[in-house]
Length: 516
Ligand SMILES: C[S@@+](CC[C@H](N)C(=O)[O-])C[C@H]1O[C@@H](n2cnc3c(N)ncnc32)[C@H](O)[C@@H]1O
Image (cartoon, rainbow, N blue to C red):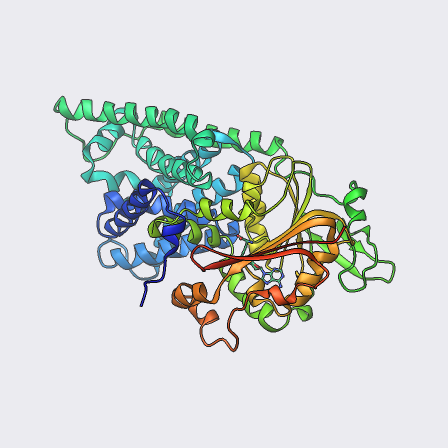
């Protein structure tokens, strides 16, 4: 029997990315046992996780994990016990999670290297606050400087510049790594920032090494470093004040955009929509009285009762994954030696998109394809899952790209006929409740003569990968129907119908043209 080709053979990733992914994994595992590594990896992981979920949810999860980990590992080892022990541990965990929350909120309004600064500044401020509020024995559990006892160069940096220098470097490294990660470590995006921060780190550590080799010894308690603490606090407050004066998201009010509203239709009745403001909130309304709320700039065209069959099942899956979707793609790809970029570029090669075109992606997810489309394209994305759309919104802010997002069902699009220059779909249609309807809808909203592209994984891929993916496998095993490429669902009057299997039969791409 011939061996099935793996995705790696068709989209090989960089060996460096693979080595780096394994290095992070190994350091993460070591960090569980070695606090000097754990502090760096914990900050890295917490900053990453916070960037993938809604801020409040992230705060609750990071604080709870911090509480459980610190309370479990120090029980019986501190001079407090019982309820007081739990209460102090809880307070420490809340203070520990605070910088990640404040970073998450402030960062989205800043760009470039500046967007990496809220975490170290808030981090130093929170550590200073914890040092004053918590009993010394409890603070030692949450003190990042304390974790670096077995890292003499860094401790020497702390002696030179004050204890605050240690958390500053740990938090900043975490923020820098996550920033570069969000941009896929692209040299054109993060090169300047990475080099500047690298020089800063090299100088700081060289100072520490210099002191170490000069034979100095680290005192038991690092000097307070009040200057650095005050600078950090002032910097953090100044940064948030400045960030608040900048408009974060572009104005997504529909009232001032009649051209956009003109493209929208009720998915149920097909009626044109107009904007209604009620109690300070916007709604899109039809003459017959339907009302669709606009939440955080995203019109919601779905009611719970409209989501039936497999759509309901997979909505649960994507609501659970949400912002972690990008991470699982990137981490899985890097560890498996697969270039996700290569996969998406191959797909984009099938689209006929020119700058200025109005383009719709149904089931846009977190918007990964958008990042590969030419600048100047007018992007429209629709998805069933609010969590995926929220992650998409965050990605668009990070990439400094604009797109109109809609919550709706790909089987019932809220757009007028013939209004998009290109319509495409990637990943999702295999498990739609009504695939034929989704294809008819893509055709309806595409302009005559435009190309429509549909791609998803084959049964082979679903069996080889999805059925074996921990946590998600339950959604794919014991299916009643196998995945079948939907070429038979394309109406015969479409032109130039082509279907191709790519990546050694693991995905299919179906393309056709709407008659002009
Ligand atoms: C595998 S993800 C693909 C996301 C994106 N196209 C990409 O390639 O990164 C599948 C997406 O389809 C969405 N989805 C599933 N059923 C849908 C439906 N009936 N209408 C609209 N979106 C749907 C899910 O919420 C999820 O975001």
